[in-house]
Amino acid sequence: MVNAINQACSRKEEAVLCAICEAAAIAVPLQTTQTLKVIKLCLKKGKRAKKASLEAICSIPGLAAELWSEIVAFISDEDRNIARLASVAAIKAGLNAEVITLTRHEKISYSRPFISVETTAVKTN
Image (cartoon, rainbow, N blue to C red; front, top):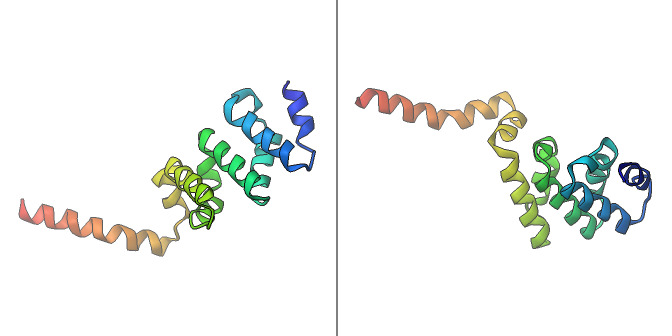
């Protein structure tokens, strides 16, 4: 079964690529290097493939964090289903992925409100 899926990964038909995304989303043994490449590739295809890819990303632990920048780009997609799935994937990626992608300057800017709250709390106690 795994060999058959891996062989199918070289196909170009959108229906086949969507099926690969869906299979990888539900079966851990099918989450191979080749199927993960298909999931990433489908983010650049049509709406159906994007949807299948984002559903797989939501189902595979850690994949959303790896594809953070691609996911964020889809949050404002005009297709509500794609935007919703991208939002879910972004939430699954968690705060750690967001912090990793920030520049040093952005990290300092985002941390300032927390520093001032901590400082105020310390002063009042």
